[in-house]
Length: 88
Image (cartoon, rainbow, N blue to C red; front, side, top):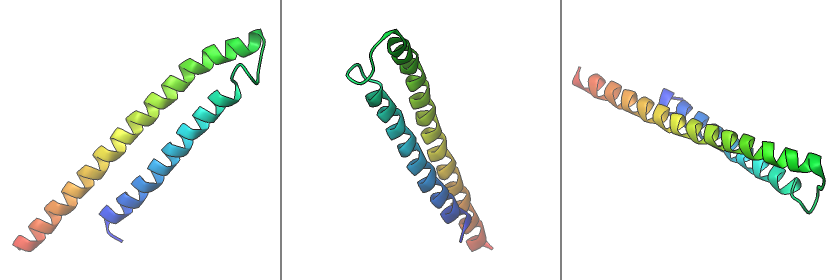
């Protein structure tokens, strides 16, 4: 396998994990709703979790951007390698 194909496979897996993490975050939000959990502790949890959820979603978005940037860098490096190899 080439470095580019290895990177593409890693990117695919990382995006899959990011999707799973986002689904899990949303599931927790749904499970701790006012219909399923009542009382002062539930309100406190929901308030705190809303902040954590935003941080998690932001981190996932940043990770996705970094993943895409890394893949583009590898693609560019591989293309430059091919060009320099063809010039020799």
